[in-house]
Image (cartoon, rainbow, N blue to C red; front, side, top):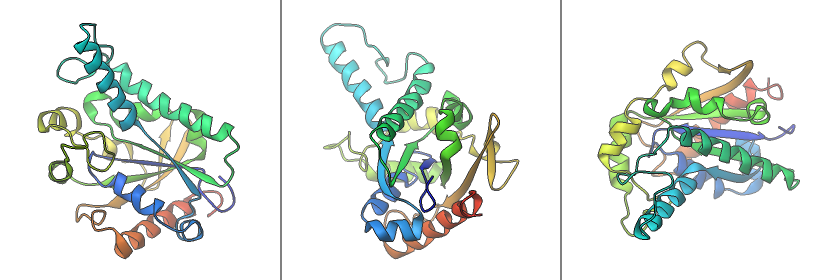
Length: 239
């Protein structure tokens, strides 16, 4: 990361926890305001949901053609667990392509959710490249599964199931994939860092059970600023 901004912000949490709303808020800010208050440059966002949705669409097309589905079964579950790993490695590839373009002054935001049924965050972080792990800070958006379910129901727009802000999962799939979350176990040993191999990753938690992200505005900005300042203090540049 530069002397002013984070190189990489990894934004994680349950589906509908508020991650996309946070990105939407940060993207709306003036560049200087975003840099000064949040230590974030121009945002380059890479999210595994559009990748996942493309796989769903391809499998539907293949099924309609009478051909074997590549990624998912008829119920929309992955045929192989390693496809979750592939999604994370695709995120890494997007990061590398962006940095190869000479993207000085940008912060890469990597967004995803993981539940225990497919290896959790512990497995997902093991798929991240060394370059990302050594340059990243993590913001975990904390909501209960019940709050995740509530917002998942509310945000569903049947006219835009592919939308970042309006997509939704069926409740049975939410329970099977995301009811159990390993974040508390991953972060249990230290209140500021967790380990991936030999790398210590700074993290903080955005508490969103009261849903500060839907309304957005000044209160969301204030709470996000506090989180980013805490993360900055944990880095070599801010400490």
